[in-house]
Each structure stands twice: as structure tokens, then as C-alpha cells.
Length: 412
Image (cartoon, rainbow, N blue to C red; front, side, top):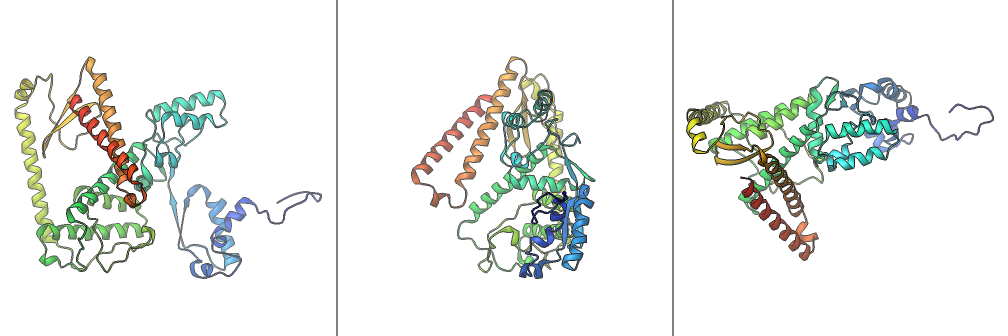
């Protein structure tokens, strides 16, 4: 601190950046010669933004050399700076600030407005900020959870030195996490409570599909680990996402000899297994997948060649045949014909607004059901929740599902 001779100064007060420069040392117990300091100093990697290289990073290096006898870290990963979906710097006066907690837990548009109103913006800035929130978050922010937010941010790291954060992308990863969770539950229900996988796998004696999934899994693990080690984090997320989304999800019970760690944070990362790779099996599976895609293409061509018949019999004003890669916007009622074919019906005229309102209600009912099922399927639910409460929750779930079925029937 700087002061005149007559100023009374507290000797324990440190300059903000000076004290921040001590971070790698102080968190390990310095100036005491602690076991943590001996074990973990110097650390390996610092992750920070490029805007505070001098203010913080340089100070940590200089103070680490002087007080710790060595540089505090050997590598620095500079993450992109997070901006809004339009590439603008986040600002309270624009109303485009995204609080991670609000993405994790979700918040209504009214809640976003209240956060602004609790600040110190003048009336003109407040009005501009509120309009900005209405444009960017017309329905508020959906509850996405911490895993989806982390996955989205990591997947964005290929975007140079800036992240133009689109909340809908985070919502997409939340839906992906939900699919992952549901797939695990489905697999566990089929395997049964007493299922224990073998401690050692011998691919040669396994069925074709098992050989294939082990081979592509092995390659995914290799690609993911290599990407993480080279700080290509977006490539790591792409490898994980692609394997799950376009191949298969494997989350199985542990063997008897396996001891689960208290947290995934201290678990060993998966490693490749010698003997799992099988190029012939992968080539054969490529042929199978190509055959399936060809069959789907034939189904599409069949619909194309009979558009007039379908439109006439269904009394449609128009009919468009799309592929699974084509995006279908909201505002459509849908029904599944078979595993390769779905139909989407757009409402016109006076019924359009009413149908859209029903679809929104269906979406909300589905979200309520998802939240309730997640709570009821949580670990320890049966033991910790009183029987009468469990019974009420089950009744509520049954009621919501019945209402959803009725609403879906009315909309279609």
C-alpha cells in the first residue's frame, strides 16, 4: 500500500495482483514447508484468459521463481473469451450477460429482468438491456445442468480466441446428456441387477457387433486421449460425441474386482486395450451401414414417386419429402410411421396458433415428467424419501403421463 507518513497502514494487506501472484504457492501452504508444497509445486498447467498475461501470469512466474525457487507451471493454456451469440462482449447495459448458474439451473425471462432491475443501471440502459434479453432469451433459459454447459464450452474451444456462446447449443448438449442417461437406464434394465461383466474380454470369441463396438471404442479412446494431451479439447468432445451419437453407447456395470472411486474426478481415464482393434470388422460394418442408408434412400424415393397419391388421400395442400439431416422447425405435430419414416403436419389458418399453444404445453409436460423421473430415479431415493411422499410423486407422474397422452392425441 502507498500512503503518507501520517497514514496508519495494516501490515497484512497486500496489493490485489501481488497477492494473486502468490496463488500457486499460497494454495499449497506457503510460506510453511508443507507436504502439499513439496508434492505439487511446481504444477503442470495453468489455464487462463489471454487478457491477463501480464497482470497475473507474469507475476506468478516472477514470484514463483523468487519465493518458490522454480517456475510455478510449465505450460499455459489460454482459453477463448466468452461472448454472446452475436459475438458481442457481455455487458450489463446490453442485457446479454450469461450467468453460468442460470444456465445450469435455468431461469425465466422475468427472472432475467429482475436480475437487471436489482443492478445499478440508469433507466435508459435498463430499458435497452430488457429489450436485449427479450430478443436473446424470449423464453428465458432452459435448465441445462453443469455437464451440458461444460461440454458445450469445451466443444467451442476450436473457435480461435473467442466463444460466441449460443444457449441453444448448450440445450442441445443437455438433450444429448439425457439420451445418454436414458440409454444407460435402458441397458441396465435389460442386463438385470445381478449382471457382472467379465474381468477380461477376448474379442475373437465375441459376436460380430461386439467386436465392432470394441474396435471403434478403442480408436475413440486413443483419439480422445491424444486430443486432450495436445490441448485440442474440441476434437476430444467431437470424438466422444460422434462415437456415442453415431455408433453406440457403452456404460456398463463394473467387474467384481473393480473398486469405484469416490468421484469421477479421481478415476483413471480409459486407456486403449491391445487386441481390440479390428479393421476387417470395421470395414464389414461400413458395408452394413451403407446398405441401411441405401434402404432408407429407397424409402424416400418411394415417397417421392407417390407424393400425389399421399397428398390426395391425406387431403394435404402440399407435401415435401425430407431426409433425416434436414432440420424440422417447431410448430409441427409429428407421428412415427416406422423405424425409417416419420410424418410432420403443419397447421394453417385459425388453428395454427391453437396447435402451437398445445405443442408448447406438450413440451412443458415432457419437461415436468423428465424432472420428476430424474428425481425418482436418483440414487438413494427409495431409502431417503418417505413412503407417502413416494406414493404422491408416483401419482403425480402417472397423472402427467396421462395428460401428456391426452394432449398428444388432441394435437395429432
